[in-house]
Amino acid sequence: MGKKKAQRRPAHWERGLVVRKQGGFFTVVPEGKQEEVTCVLRGRLKKRRKMEDLVAVGDWVWFRRVPGGPGVIEEIEPRQRALVRRAPTPRGEYMQVILANPDQIVLVFACAQPEPKLGLLDRMLVVAEQQEIPPVIVANKVDLVGLEAAREIFGLYEDIGYPVLYTSAVTGYGLEAFKAQLQGKISGLAGPSGTGKSSLLNAIQPGLGLAVREVSKSGEGRHTTTVRQMFPLEGGGYVADTPGIKAFALWDIQPEELDGYFPEIRELVPYCQFHNCTHMNEPGCAVLAALEEGKIHPSRYASYVRLRLELETGLDRTDLLKGD
Image 1 (tube, rainbow, N blue to C red):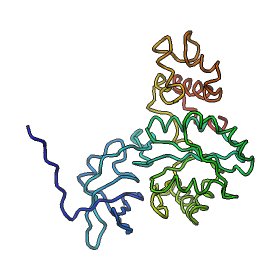
Image 2: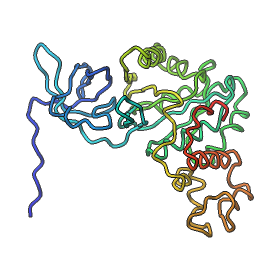
Image 3: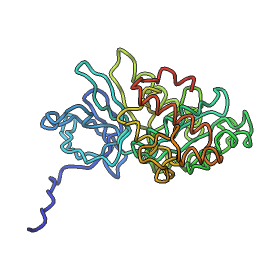
Image 4: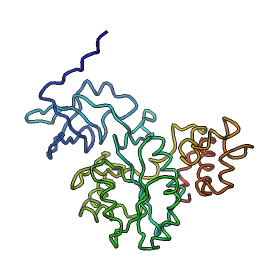
């Protein structure tokens, strides 16, 4: 049988990137252009809506313009990846897409003020691994502790293979590297409050951090329509803020899968004596042996055990994350 011919789209359809979502309206930037077009979803596509977001910020779509009215989204391209969370609704839970097609998730933590909670960082890294989104760690406020002390805190992640950027919005240290990391990419920004996310964004592009923060505050209010938006970067790329701690609840992960989301543990699993090893108390465990030999950092192993127990008990411990 011959290959099926690709379906041709009408000539007046345009390809565009969804950069804002509010209610039933979507702001689309046509590919290769600077303008924005407000669009709505075509009726037949709405019927396909199930228990997940059909269109999300970061999606590539095909739309047509309508004179005197909003454009119409006719087709949504398949997503390469997505940052998702389970969100409650009156009809039950559904998968909410926080950001579609991100090239990376940028995890911003402070070296001090507030004290870095590495347990929370480990949780965020597990979510990034599980959802196959490349993570980048930003250790901000190095001016408060010095670069050497900052590396003592976050250097263990470099040893694992995660990229770590050391920055200071106050002194300007590392800002060029931070800006270069965002350039030309779709980036989701995440991290605890007070770590300096807005200051970093303002430092590389005046007003950017303020704009991101304002949308984040107004878009999640109890009596407001949820707003999702990503902002353009000068020179190319977009950055989007992500919701807080609850977005990083562990779900859709089985306890026996967790070791696959810790890179330094994952590579040792084949060498364990038992195929169903929990890496907690079994004889012949390659992970415990590596821990004993100092090849796995104790804080990372502690995070693994804590998350494993959380998954086994089925208890949502995101309420305790501030103490991680």
